[in-house]
Length: 313
Length: 212
Image 1 (spheres, chains in turn blue, brown):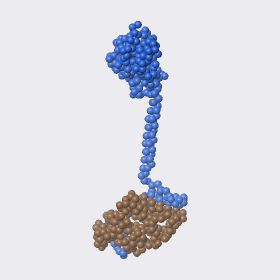
Image 2 (cartoon, rainbow over the protein chains, first blue to last red):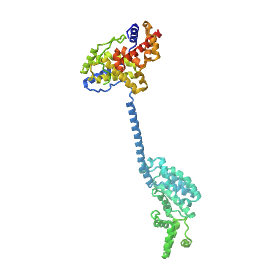
Image 3 (cartoon, rainbow over the protein chains, first blue to last red):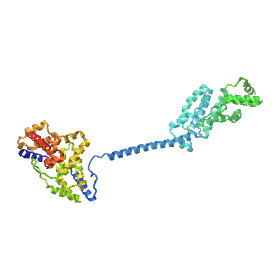
Image 4 (cartoon, one colour):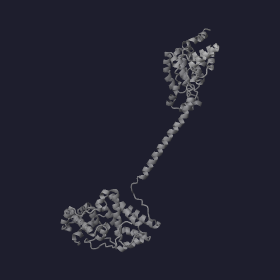
């Protein structure tokens, strides 16, 4: 191909076009890399820094921050749970006077309007702020957790049928108020007053219904609170003439949980064995205990004379 | 070592198309500078860079299918020169060696980023209808090619050329390489390189004639 005027003109036109040049930063980077390579004697040189989008570092930082945040939140939650568990356990095992409050209103509701005023003061006393030594436990537990721990204050299942309908109803109404109340502290004076009121109510109740005694319901192991609550009314009846006998009976009765074979049938069997060996007095005593312990369980007809004879004197 | 090492530096030879070489340097000067840089003289590299950066950048700017790749390929080319300074042998012209590196880097980038375009840069595309049309209009007077409008039309027509024809034209005009070197660099026979150049020139002339 021989050069001609047209080819020359095309070359001139191309030369007249705008010739792009590398940016100065790129020039500097390449020249710096070339100088460094000569000075360092390195064959492989690192890529010179150029202005380019590098999202690796910001994304890595963001991911690290999010990961650390998530882990810290998880750790904090688990730490709170770990801290709350001993508090809850301490609250559940603490022999606080909380059960006294529901016990007193439930008994008081059946007594009448005269005792209602006393009970109001008693419940107010029960709702009073706890003393300083118990404050950390009672105040640090959230209200929801406290309400979760409260159902143990409900009366035992064996006691419910023995209650009168009115008593049951009033107890049902009184229970939420008592549940909403904060865990009361062993206040000396108001608590004693409430105990006396409850004791009176129990004494009146004894005249109308079979005796409801503390050992009637086998208290769960993890909820020891109801036991003192039920024992209090018995102690409150110390002024009554039946109190010493009852206390003696209570002391003589083995705890239900310690004798797993203390069922009515076994008890009746033992009474029969006592009669066979001629220990009639002991058999009468056991029959009375059996009647008190299992009021709903009928005594066999041939053994009922033990109770009748005991009731006659 | 990538690139091609022609045994003869025939820039400005009898290719048929007049060379536009305002900043053309003798081949032995480039070779001497490169050898000096390999010997540890950083100033020699600066001189080489100043001589060839515009031509290389212009070639990549018009040949690259993506403008965003130009800077990267340009930088990779020069860093390859830096790293290969000890392997450089003066059997080939520095310009041919440099553009060979740049071409290979660009093809590597195309293969990596957009393989679908690779065929346009490797396959022959000589017998297209546009080539015949362009050939028919070769007699348009070149005096009409003037003005800013002509420049824009030329740039557009250049980008519209098939990649292989545009490459030959750019190597000829931008890198001031001979057809023999272009053929060796692109790996095609001499006649193929010549044909591609002829088609490219014909199309560009037709475009400029239409503008005027």
